[in-house]
Image (cartoon, rainbow, N blue to C red; front, side):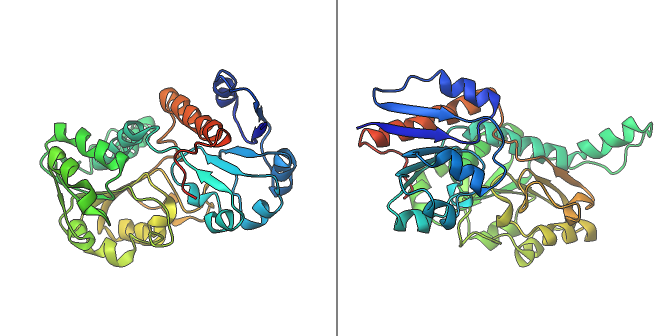
Length: 319
């Protein structure tokens, strides 16, 4: 049975990657380059789609209702719930897949980069030096021997735990399902803690949980207050998991020593976002995933989700 898929919001590099992939008989994939400006434009591109290879556009319940032919959405990333209304998809019998593992090491390396940049005030000193100010204050923070708390223990968190072994950091972690990960934690030398306890003993906290109703605001003002004074907070997961106003306030008061954030609740941020003016905040524009190798892998997995579904053998299915 023919299966027609659409990639409505590709960029030029991903278009080249997609078009280089072989497609099985009966499977077709249209790729659109121009930006998707609104829901109407998105629906117009996907009106005849059995499957969608989804980048950045949000598929609300209203959007899903306007696509009666749609059978499968393959999200290019892990946090599909931030872009697809999973309950509405389930009600309409639409499968939703994601691409876990495409760049665990890639994202973990960016988390480490943010951690190092925050600990040593790299962006601050870069700005000063470019202005002709040769200053060496404030002093940095040693990570060697410090305690890292991982909020979540998926593939990215585990990759980061491996990376910081070279810094001789002590690693603790919280996960809702510790029993599933005992062997891997033992291999990496990671000790599981309750969330509040992990935060309380950490010099650095790195967030790695999926966005879900129960994780929105998980790291809130109360939990930030439990962190050690001068601790560093890193987030490469999703913006709404962390209370950004509380982070900005804690940076301003000096309770947090620094923060490194690749994700924000609003992307791009409003000019009024307090993080933009908060001291000792290192911000990057949701680029932790963005290397050629990781982008090639994410496209391969995303297209594979659709071809497998079309063949009646769905993989990596969330709904």
